Image: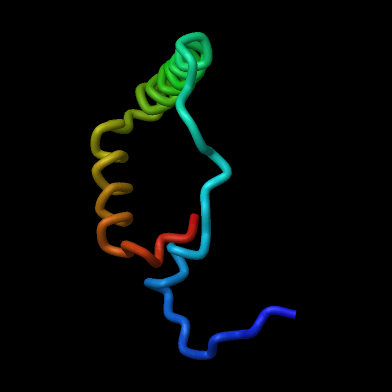
Length: 75
């Protein structure tokens, strides 16, 4: 059973956790992912236009949340 360090802090947690993504995308995968992101952006932009929302403003607000919360952004 692993030992538990009672003095561990949130800063050191990022060093313990790894992403499930590693390596580089091949050109074919990159193209597919870019296409899918483009589709999502198209639908998101269409939704904003239909609801009279400014996508840029939405992105700025979300960016402000990320910058404000920093490491505490658990979404």
